Amino acid sequence: MKKFFHFDSEESRQALLARARRVALTALQQYELEWNCIRFIQLSDTITYKIETNTSNSYLLRIHSDRMNQEEIYSELLFLNELRSAHDFIVPVGIASIHDSYVLECVTEEGYNRPFVTLMSWVDGEHSSGEFTDSLVYSMGVLMGKLHEASSRFVTPYHFVRPHWGITSFLSDIRKLERYYAKFLSSSAWNQYQLAIDKIIDHLEGMDQTDQNYGLIHADLHSGNVVFCNEQPHPIDFGRCGYGYYLYDMAGALLELSPKQRQLYIQGYESVKSLDMDYIHKLECFFVMIMIENYSHHSSDPTETSNLIHEQKYAQAYIKEYLHGNTFLFKGIDPIEVDQP
Image 1 (cartoon, rainbow, N blue to C red):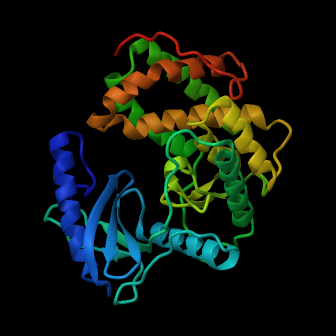
Image 2 (image 1 turned 30 degrees about the vertical axis):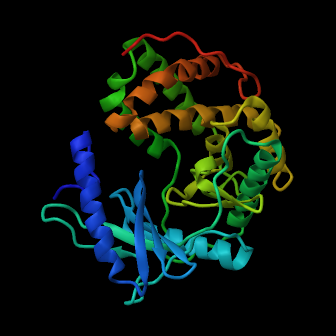
């Protein structure tokens, strides 16, 4: 059977989206909704749609990739329900079908694996547009600190299963990157990546896991997964949530911020949850790790190749600083010239 999510060209991508829309329309028949519009949002780890109804309520429909099994998806919904019910977070929560199922397995074209589908409540709010203000950056740091505090108190129920983000998952991303790196990296640039990868793995192997630094994390809390309502940030898209270091979670959010904003974000975080004295070097390790993971994720998508090539002058600059053991999070890093792939 073919993977439902397989695509490596624009033609196969369009075919995937056509399959997905038919699955979405089929899945909607299993919910008691008077819906009037289905709007495609994006193709990423899931294919997502906004479902609008004849009332003020909207919903999020997700078609899941083969990366997550049914038990993992259901566990995500359990965690979200805990955040909503026990800690008053405004987060998307699962909606049951007419057969009281929260994770559907839907029929699709012959020859393809059946994908899992979930329907969730829609979180109202707007993404931040333009430059981040200092107050918004600080508030996003506070939000992450509160999420980590809440997750540290979460008692996982029996059969709770979520992925672990660490050495094993990183090596899986590297294996994918090895197949596609030549699209956007020269041989010399790839050599620098390999040196950074080896250093990251050595660093991870030397880290100790404690209840204070490791637990359930969002794992993708960049600005695209935060919406603001009355200037209050709300987290969305917990599709990658799993077990990992809290600093790994923070590093993913810092990637898009300026050095000054990174300091503000951390100040907001520490207003809720304190960090170890030696956190900076660990955070920089995770910063480069997630940067490489992101490139691996997008490497097989032909529509992303030009962006990946453009970003390498910045990526190589960070990798150079990391390999030389220079602290870089809070200072401006100039892009460097790189060879074309």
